[in-house]
Image (cartoon, rainbow over all chains, first blue to last red; front, top):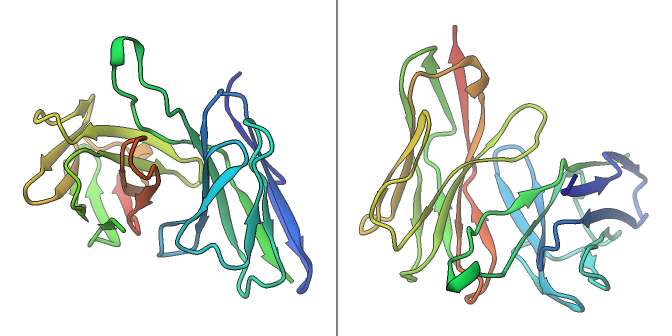
Length: 120
Length: 116
């Protein structure tokens, strides 16, 4: 089935360590996103990418890094510079294509099941 | 950057009753998308309903409908005949179209409790 796969589902990290969260999609979507979710703060955008080898910072990019070497993959690295990394991380993707005969894109994001990172 | 505000951190409704969740947003654009997503305890984000700004007609999906007021930049969600399975966090979201800075912004969420 088509969808977005995030791994691992749960991850524990010691302070000072870098960790990488995986996000893979087989929906042939162009754009991919990483969000961080903390209690009471909704989803905050970390990074997004609209095309391979290109990505843009979101609102809270400090302490994070990403790469987009393949259309299907958009891994997120949480570096030791991120001061408070314990959170729930969501990956999402969407198509940038319009429909046939110039029809409009639906605009929705499709989400993975998330990864819970805990710093010990 | 565009902002999305949900002023109700928590809401409660009796089963079979109707509840309305509020959302306002700030943008200078005329072409954009608006969404309501549901996040149950499993934390999987599920699309509830979408609205395109150029469409004046309010979107409906079964028991879910929206009241889209473009001039007021308001986008509320009405849930009719509430069911126990509707209990979840609900997020309002705004997105520019693909040709214009393609990011999506979310509100802080409203936690909906459904009482039997």
